[in-house]
Image 1 (cartoon, helix red, strand yellow):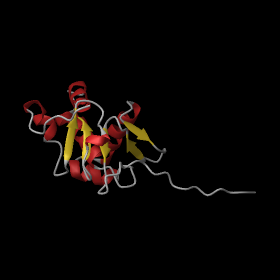
Image 2: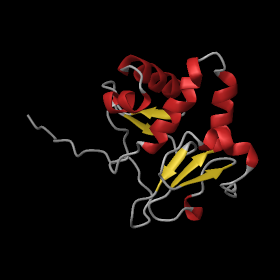
Image 3: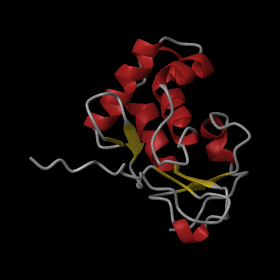
Image 4: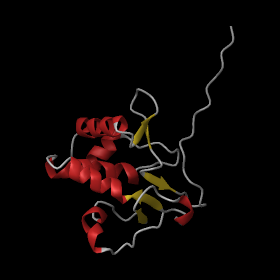
Length: 147
């Protein structure tokens, strides 16, 4: 897949969703090889689909939540706290939780546990750390109990 130019005229609305994070837009699943260290690769086609599917959502909160999710990929590979996301989006925690759950049901996010821990599916967004390594969810080592 080839990345889209950052100044393409048809990406204007989608590009405004992303802040200062270095972002490369792709017309399909992001290609890790095309990303620089510290960069975020996003499947902009999915944003267009979400925007057209959820046209009745107030101020198209669906795209705003999805953009915040993509930018909130932590070094552990999981998403940050919902209350932090709600503060950034000027909405409620319930709204963020509802959209995260809906995106997980649609396959855009992966539900890691039933306590609200999510990770982003690689077909949606890929982030590289400063060393150029793709950030993936890290499973915590679990203790093995023997009786």
